[in-house]
Image (tube, rainbow, N blue to C red; front, side):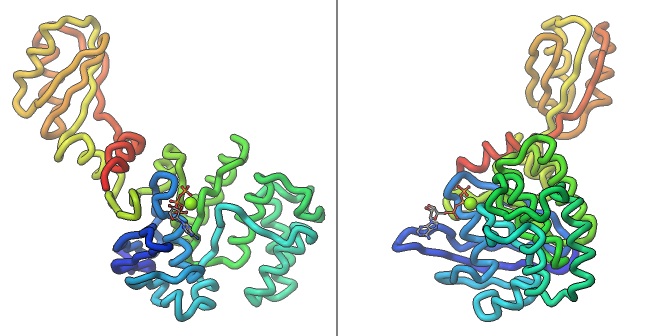
Length: 310
Ligand SMILES: Nc1ncnc2c1ncn2[C@@H]1O[C@H](COP(=O)(O)OP(=O)(O)OP(=O)(O)O)[C@@H](O)[C@H]1O
Ligand SMILES: [Mg+2]
């Protein structure tokens, strides 16, 4: 475990009597890639805004890199690269000029900035339009520029609010690669997204918000096991021929809780990983075992199970 670089204690935001974030306790360690999930209106963006000092908490406290964003917003902004839901740039300025402006704000020397900007524009695939004004850019192009804008200041943390929305499929791969590279550099990342396969690919840990409450927080595999039923494992065995008798054979294996057959595939729920015992039981029954695997926990299933809570 590293050091917590983001820590909230009973963090709450009330907008005109409506509680958008409710006593949130979040702890993110240095270098973690944290997936922040939740339905529309769950409170993700509001949380990020409080972490950045862009909106004041109604109650509770926040620390980002040991600093209080409400009292030391400038220090926090220096530590964090933020990609908002809708990226805003100086529209009359070119992509390159916008990045120079960010570099200047972050006190990066001009010569060094020039070099970094040239290479970054290439990385995000904007070299050809580097000197076009941003008002000619599509949404996806602005999003790419937003990622470059974060990289330029080499932040300790990056808060990415739906970074791949509106990006074409090849572009999505590029952007996920950029985010993964940020993670490898040790940048702590909060990744807000509704695109669960992307989150599953990048993040080891997720938090799920529902109506301002954190209803799940943990490693994807642990949450998956919980979602499947307290500590249960799901396995799939494929056999050569679907004989109903096999279902009974497997049910008799100690620790097996449930068996269902769909075509030639048996879905088995058990207290632990019983692949060895189950394979033996299938073979002993005279059937041919074609394949056997422990089901990977899909984030989709975890999400559906938890986001209904609250
Ligand atoms: N400035 C505001 N004034 C009043 N209510 C607000 C304000 N900003 C957000 N809200 C409300 O707070 C709740 C949480 O909104 P928030 O934008 O944090 O959700 P979100 O999880 O980011 O959703 P999405 O996935 O749609 O981006 C919503 O009900 C929203 O209407
Ligand atoms: Mg949002």
